[in-house]
Figure 1 (cartoon, rainbow, N blue to C red):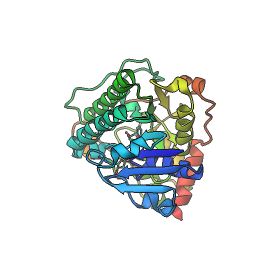
Figure 2 (cartoon, rainbow, N blue to C red):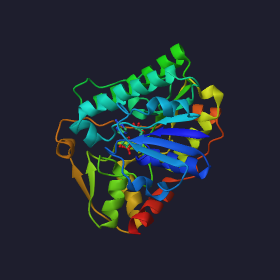
Figure 3 (cartoon, rainbow, N blue to C red):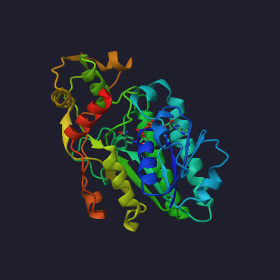
Figure 4 (spheres, rainbow, N blue to C red):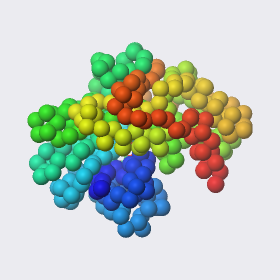
Length: 321
Ligand SMILES: NC(=O)c1ccc[n+]([C@@H]2O[C@H](COP(=O)([O-])OP(=O)(O)OC[C@H]3O[C@@H](n4cnc5c(N)ncnc54)[C@H](O)[C@@H]3O)[C@@H](O)[C@H]2O)c1
């Protein structure tokens, strides 16, 4: 199979590249290396089945040709991470909306319409008080002057672009609403909590906890996520659907710090920072986030292979190496 991955040098994109190369597929990727790195593709860059262009999706001249020869597309290029979204909101619009519109417009015009797995996000649920979050729930988004609203709105706009392309141009698309994904190659640079805690534990530094640490999240290993996405792509009933992808075990950030301590064998203290101190701006965090996974389980035979503890132990041993 020929697989085209946008954002293949990023965290999740590089795992999709690795997964499909291991299956013997030919993989094409485009990435502008804004947050992705060459280090993420170092171990497969010499694989003859792997093709990489360093370019911006918004202007890349080979987009049409690559789409025409693809059997499956994963659209994972995006501007992600709280620090990045706050510091460069225009890049969110340019990549998450304009480049996504260009991609779907080009697919809509293509001869053979390959299946598209679009990386949507739990951010589309915004501030919904419901738990667990179900695909049919209302999407409740903060006013546009909230620092994270641009990202949430861009991801909702993406789903609208994807759905319009499905309805009007028969582009077969699956909107995978990813919840917090963790694993090797994720960086803490743009605000992601697990790689930051692992680094702090291994360097015997205090954990920096933003807010009170009572906010909850549900973390899923990226190696489970790529399997779930592959299974969804093989299920015709997934097409035209928004589907939650993640893990439904929910924990608070304070509990996460305790687990990282236990796995690292240290007892690090925690240093609490207000959101104002952490992000340099007024900020209200999402209090809790847990996916309802019934739809994913009904559509596929997917089963999680990684527990949070096992992922953290793996990350700690990789960090130490
Ligand atoms: N990591 C998570 O927990 C999570 C959760 C929900 C949704 N997602 C979605 O999954 C996707 C991948 O996220 P990630 O965590 O791997 O982030 P990432 O930043 O590691 O990957 C994004 C990649 O896209 C590339 N990119 C950005 N703008 C580009 C452009 N204009 N042209 C070409 N390449 C560009 C970056 O260089 C990077 O390699 C994103 O769409 C994100 O919204 C991630």
